[in-house]
Image 1 (spheres, rainbow, N blue to C red):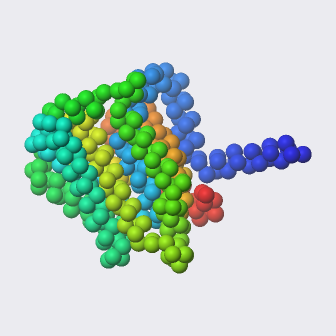
Image 2 (image 1 turned 45 degrees about the vertical axis):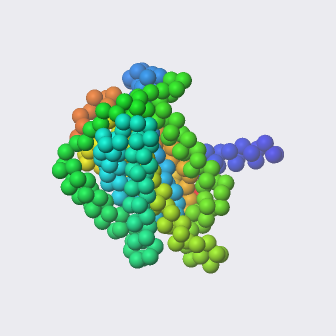
Image 3 (image 1 turned 90 degrees about the horizontal axis):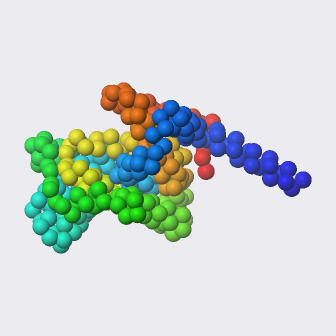
Length: 329
């Protein structure tokens, strides 16, 4: 009788997973089909490149998940990412002759990202302006600053140490992948096992109740923007180490990709629930999709079209699940 009950429970869980993660399952099947059609797709070299590709955007997707769990949203992550590339390249060209100079360039870039996040947080929490409007405006402002600063031109760097960080590997695994995995592990631990993480969930679930319970909800809403600013700057540094350049053309789709990965991973846009670990899987699914499009030889504008369709599908699926009462827990 006990085994029968466990079997029924297992069956229910599988059914629930299928209902709540249809997009994830579709893309999982899609990757298997592509692997059969293109055997090289599942090759070790391609898998290694896949993780390299998702590491930069994945860092921001991780923190975007935290913001959405808290009931907030940051469109300016893309522009912060762009500005951080440009600033880091510029500082490297001035200070990059020594290890101390490289470290100073990285620290200043990270602080710059946190300042942008701090401004977003203050506007949202103190002026009570919607985070979507706030970060949309900030996105335009920062991109404008980047365009004026560079005159619309690419800023490159030839710093050898940074190039080694972007192309080097330890035990066959790229350094950037280690950074991404460690970042995800820290975020997962904080969200699952610390008071800070629990208060983020409580704030996103019901800010009024959380405030009545003694939680400083405005502080946590402010902090998620600072965290995203930090992650966007870190991602900018990571990208520079790969391409040794910064440009207003790099990463314009970062914020929306991060949101898509978050929703595919099962985090509801209504806030209060979600998982950083599942966003890691969501980012992996998107990476598989984009890589598959390249393997299939689709031209760039078809790839852009499909990426847009993916975003619409995952957001529509999230809205449908919320309306039908199948809200992910």
